[in-house]
Image (cartoon, rainbow over the protein chains, first blue to last red):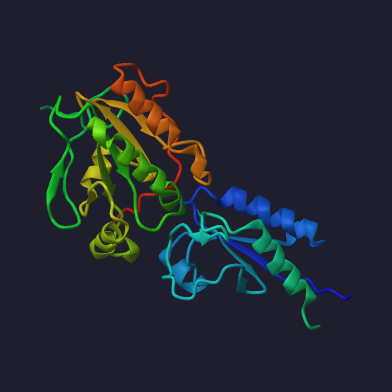
Length: 112
Length: 180
């Protein structure tokens, strides 16, 4: 089956200690899916203006083709650490690895 | 009692006198009043603070009968971070039946005096209000079974009249949201 190459972004803010773990996880999942991990678009969000412009709701924010891996539509924009909720109810500074993987695979299926 | 102006293990803790979510002012106990006191900087919207919260609450409940006092402090700028507003703090205390007061450090003076860095950031004081442990509750914010073991071992040691086996660990969490 033909696959497409999605754009993958990771937006981070220095006030959270989760960035390195997030980078490693996303790059590993990209590589496992057959994508070029070096193509990950990593962008620092350092000001309120950056956060507004990027609609940044916390660090790390991971988007695949512009789609957040765990959308939080009512979350205020700002320089903060992201709260992810795992399937078992725990709160985490990172999304579940499975969630990242599935978002990547869904995007790769695409329509084109 | 004289207090230090910075928070270092072995030194007297800085003063702490802040209102809780209902406006009642709380302070550290006087020397000798409690065998140990735990002061934890926390907030409403940090995955690390939220991840460790239940473990800290359980420790407070478990050590209450032995006279250990717990105080939680939120110093984040609520104007830029509405999740940390006084109203949001009050809602959380009531919804979750917190066993200790949640203090509002609106001026952020307490956070500066204590040199609190992140949420959560714990300080364990002895009966004389000297800082005997500073840092994280345990080694893993994602593992409930860790059970706030570093906090508990510090309390157990103080209650037994001994030195805590660990006096400082790196606090892991979200940076305090300072006013600009």
